[in-house]
Amino acid sequence: MPTRIRLQRHGKKGHAIYHIVIADSRAPRDGKFIEKIGLYNPNTNPATIDINFEKALDWYQKGAQPTDTTRAILSYTGVLMKDHLLRGVKKGALTLEQAEAKFAKWLEEKSGKIIGKKDKLKSYKAEEYKKRMAAEAEARNKRIAAKAAQNAPAAESGETAAEETTAEA
Image 1 (cartoon, rainbow, N blue to C red):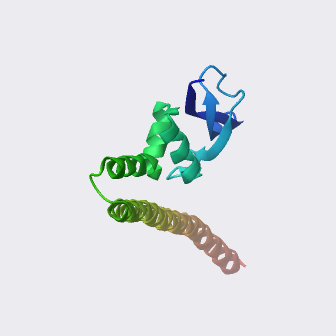
Image 2: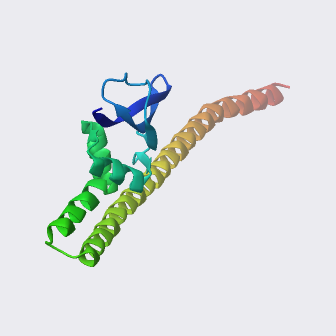
């Protein structure tokens, strides 16, 4: 039975959320599956990936073939990196401690990049909010000035009319 690591679509139209599942390659996309190992939400920025690392690594090592998208997800989460390092240990190229140290360093760098992207997006949103507020304040001031200019001539003509009526009387 050829197994695949693939996505199973859920959610509303235009707002899909995917379950990462292990399924028989002959089963339909949203059909029967062997095991659910994670969740992928591409609607957030950056995309939310919640995966059971150990199960994904175990299935990958057993020979389950990931689809293109799930391969990218597994690479992003470090499953493929961990498999690569464990194969190096198996071949004797490095020790288990060295492999764990390399993986920990890689995870630290990866989390730093993710945090950096989130901070950048947060500062961008704050900057955009400040720009919108400044533009709104400017538009409001222009509107107030235009209203004052419109009311000023009317007030002056009203005063002159009042003065003329008192002068005539």
